[in-house]
Image (cartoon, rainbow, N blue to C red):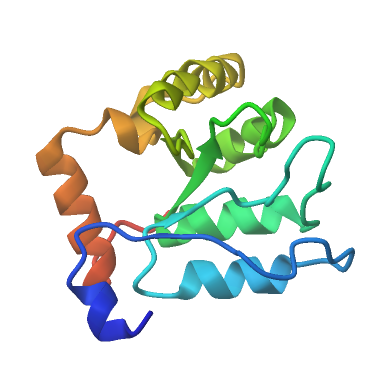
Length: 156
């Protein structure tokens, strides 16, 4: 999408939708996506689908550190086949203070209940509520998104 189109949106979740079966390290691709000033949340970051696609490889410590420094969020994709950020990766994200977003990847209303599955993973990894964007008030969410857009977000 064009930068002009993205500027009209309150919140932008960007996700990779190509080259999801590559076996090469994708750290630089992730870092470039996080540096994109229009993206607030990196959606289904590994691109993993159980029994179908293994997911992309990266130096997750560098990715989570960059996300924390830039105050961007990474999504826990709650769809059962995804298990995109597993508990081990969530613990690394927690240690870096990375913001997390819970997204159902639902395509039907009844799939919204999947959020419970990955909320359990966030709890197991001991991600604090103040690092989960879904727990922000509407005002906090809008303030955070605008700060990112204007380059005034708090950096770690």
